[in-house]
Length: 342
Ligand code: Q9C
Ligand code: ZN
Image 1 (cartoon, protein in one colour):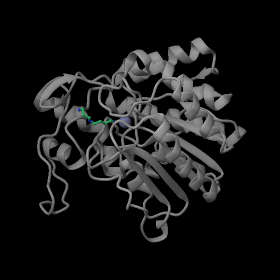
Image 2 (cartoon, helix red, strand yellow):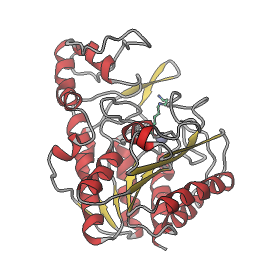
Image 3 (tube, protein in one colour):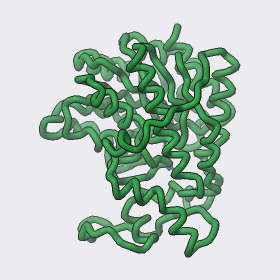
Image 4 (cartoon, helix red, strand yellow):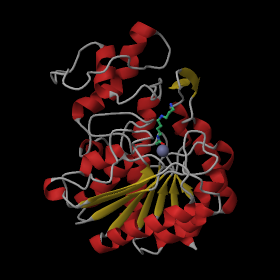
């Protein structure tokens, strides 16, 4: 399997995030990708290659131009008034309280574009997010050209980013950008399976009205878990997209044994859809030791997860999403990929 990686993810290094009313060290930190890369080298899963530059056009197929413009300038605008400290919003519009007009002031803009107060923007956030998208596009291009599978080992993650919203540690939606790239290159149908602990609200929202991308997500029930406002079972798609969105919310404490039965239903739906390509939003925050999540996968269960995904038989593009138990993160991710290859 081809692995696409760049050490330049280190540019996105925020200091703190809000957690239960306090500021704590960021869970989404550079050590995450480092330990995954190191484990992948250790088990010899495949060559780690550097990303190519596909420019901004494939990103603008998914994201709003003014949103991208905001991301490119946000830290600079913020640091002019706040100094060299991570940027956070402090005001949101609230239901019914927005005219739709985008504020000019940076604090207003942060509130306009952010979904939460848990996603700091640091000095190198934009270049790192752009690089993560290029990593996804490089891996996508490999899958497209060879029919082989690939892994985009990138951070920051992407599945909480919507067309013009950032949040949940995500800025650009790599999975959506890659799925759209397959379609733009001539594919007719692409399925995205999201196995991150959190619902992929950004990805769902991007494709909710469309029949050319099937979105299947298994996740912590949003009645209890981030992102709270999307990911319920009754969300099945809209208009032409009706029937092309499948959410499987699961209780806190869900084990692999519970999960795999639901996964089988989700993968059957993918099979029935008969896509040409599969994109996997790969979060391993379903691990029992994850500090912010509530499922109970053991490390060995990730091998089986990889095996189940490989049984579908599609050229598959894995995109790195969440997973915050640093000590086991490398093993858990490599286990999925090893299981997939076996
Ligand atoms: N401040 C992904 O796994 N915040 N994002 C949790 C800690 C949101 C997770 C509370 C978690 C987002 C890609
Ligand atoms: Zn997650």
